[in-house]
Amino acid sequence: MFYLTIQIAFLLTLAIFIGVAIGWWVANKIKQSPTLPQETSDNPFDARFRLEQCHRENATLRRDLKETEERAEKLNARLDNSTQHDDNVLERLETYEIRLEALMEDLQMRDDTIAVLEQELEQLRDQRNNA
Image (cartoon, rainbow, N blue to C red; front, side):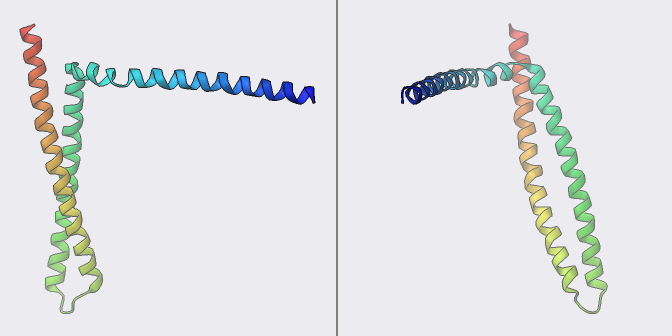
């Protein structure tokens, strides 16, 4: 019985130490998280990197949009030239139109992000020049 009591006490002590260690680690992670965005937002190289990344994603979205528009035009032409309406072509055309709308929304959001990042980069340049 004494052996069982010692085992329970040992396991409880071990659980307490592990709990304290995990709590300490999580508390340090939470303290460090808010400071990272402030450090990166003051870095003009980070803003420039984000801007370049948005430009690359914007170019990819524009290319996807162009390809999808071309496919939709081909399907429209095929549908206009066919004597009978093909349900498969109609479904594909609707799918491409939905994708076009989604790509346009993504493209608009990316353009807005680029505009914001360009303003942020300009502000950082002005702050650097004034300092």
